[in-house]
Image (cartoon, rainbow, N blue to C red):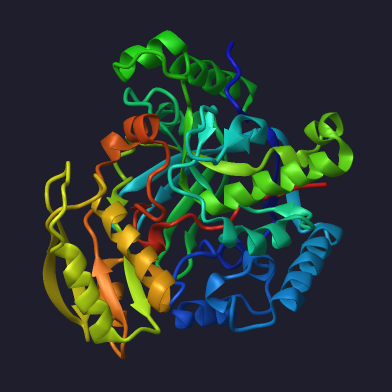
Length: 420
């Protein structure tokens, strides 16, 4: 059997109050502090994942170093107080019923960082889907490098168009031990989890190994001389990159052989199928602020109308000012994806004239936020069927090119594991 880079591991699950424990990924609602203030009130006086994560909305609002110390202290407290049940050498099958009624199916297991490279042009088994913003890693690294609990919001994709791996277990639930079933807070839907045994884990490994067979891979994508890859990061690109950075630091400290034996090598993730019917790619919109609004819009219009040679057809965006929408057309784009063309403009503008940029999940929220001097840019969505082929041909996509659903549909923290 080929190396598949995804393995069973020791998984921790809180013994009680899962509804209060499980909270949304920390990188969501970054411009909506009310959401996270509500979560703080809901989880007050409970053991909760909220106490061991750093919601990014607070990054510039509270003392970072003190908060990180609190997180590490709370992690140790949770382990010392034995609030978890531990499932040794396990994988979980999970079903998340989203608020639109669709069901996202996944498998919780450990990813091998030896098989992961987030750099553009990587030929590794596990690859990033978007460009890694290196200056976004230090806060995540600082939280993780001294953490004793790994609690993930990372979703990793496989391209299993026959639906033979994850979906296989949807008809086998009655034969599996149910571990939990509860409603997620703040309109997160419902989630159920099942324990997978040795037989089921072996099936997963065998079927993953077939996906990464070189001959099969090259025939599937109709390309020769390409290195097979099995996993593409769907959500949590920067969190996985931070885990990789911490692992590489550990190699420098302990030596490569000692580090390879460490639990730090195997972060916990949820595996999803690109072809899962519930996975609908959403555009990630842009919100620009701390700018001269009129100057920004004039420069954007000049960029859209530049007369230059282009190999690509014109691209449309919607600009929002004071919550009012206006369609604009990039007549001669310099990137094959609209998000790439607009990101190039934004990077150049902000570097030259200053300003701030946020990435917003959801068109409605972008429109609501686009006032008081802020400008929103609403983008179209990339086709998920092109994802793996695009990574093969072009490497990573421009940063924040897509999202797998709107903010409330992101992964909630739930399962975790002890790391040493």
